[in-house]
Image (cartoon, rainbow, N blue to C red):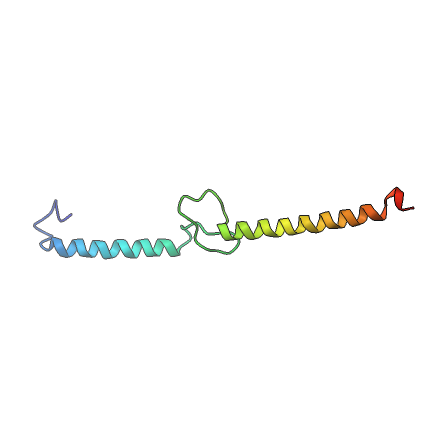
Length: 89
């Protein structure tokens, strides 16, 4: 408005500095609000254009947990197959 209505806004420099402060305030407020995508597991902020709903660390933790469960199942299957083997009779 200071460009179009210069007669009413005599201190354009002051208006620009206030605009910068206001922009920083708005950006900080938006980052702390629900508008910022957050990891559904831990709540960390995600990158603005993130394709996924969880962060990298939660993704890696879930994969490690799944691999651990698979390893346990495989070892139990091997033990079970030894137990019920026709050769074992």
